[in-house]
Image: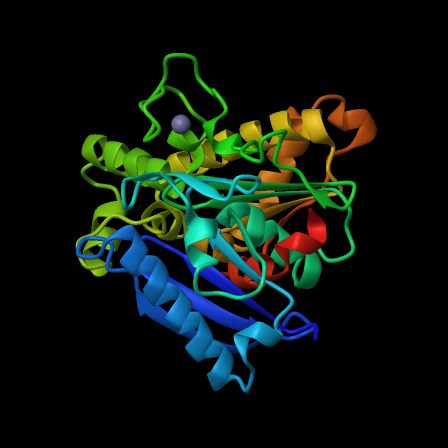
Length: 319
Ligand SMILES: [Zn+2]
């Protein structure tokens, strides 16, 4: 049977999907992670029970699946099965695969969520048909996934391809990882929000203030984009500089990997051409010998959160 089960283990919720042989999610459910109140082993047990229940709700028994796959926004060693570090829960070196196998009678694969997302997009989304793919998910941080020659690349110990933590500015902005100047400290949505707030402080007349009020007095990843679309100069500068940052990082990765295609995931990809057109132009300008050999297209991912579930379920196919 080719139907699989994929799990997205996040800090606030655990999403479970039954995925058919055409990579469509035929059944999906979500349970709270309860990371504050439950222990690691309780959470794993709840996840396994919910997985069994999801399989049954979709008309299957979990033992009929060839395997079960899990993706998580954490540092994971797919070889040892250890979840090495998960900052949402403070778990360190917990035996995720071993603990799950107490309840799940088929092989369990575990992987980083950004790696699962690029597998999902390669199987069923925007990267379908391409053998060399770089995907960056711009969100709180930057998740990255790499497919090289049709295989997921994650380094000798399975924990590489963390492109968001490439040093972008030596001694630069503090990163959540404890280091300084990482790419994600400049090009994530959190960084965009910081850049927007800085610009709002020095431009009291900017339309960004009104946009923020309309967004519930919050500054979000959309605040500067929305004000820029109204022609606000301070917002246009924020957006232009932010896209410079994103493009500059992408061009460095293109120089290393020369993928067929670059995918942008995360809510910001819904900005469409407003983001992607200048991003492609700037990437082409920054990339090595771009005027002679060009640059791969930078396009939006299209499966959203489903990519992580689909890719988790089928991650073994690209190892
Ligand atoms: Zn970092």
